[in-house]
Image (cartoon, rainbow, N blue to C red; front, top):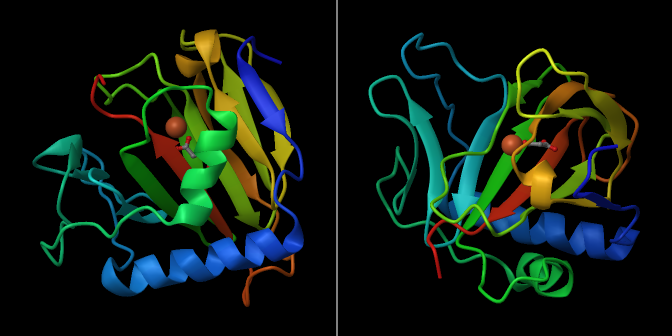
Length: 201
Ligand code: SIN
Ligand code: FE2
């Protein structure tokens, strides 16, 4: 596995996972899931998204990938990052500043996320912290260069992973969701919460 990829298996127990899902659903009532679209091609992501925190990650055909302070559909500020999520960053990120973006990814059982790098942040020294909830998924990660050899790892509900050091620059994505592998959510599917620092502190 890549240098700087840190996996905390079953970091959240079932009760903590359920509490976090409740907090996420509350965020989604004020900041509903939206359908991001790729720059240029205009192709929809199969993953639906929302955000919490001062900045949210959005993408559309005209503006491309970016962070912005307001929801692209409702045009209201994102809700604050729930304490249940912030506390995971404070415990594991080993970084002095707070996260500014909490991306909420909703994967239906047939959704996937193509290999990509996280490069839209001004602060690339901070780790990227990612929490998996609900159905398991096959995560793939490799060096930044296209065509380089990759490795895959199954991420399960309650797992927390960090991209630090060389892995912060990795190409990574989700090959597939293993629909029905978890009973946490009321329906098949997966939630991924990604915390990032956007500005240089
Ligand atoms: C991402 O890299 O943007 C998402 C990874 C995941 O869903 O686990
Ligand atoms: Fe990513």
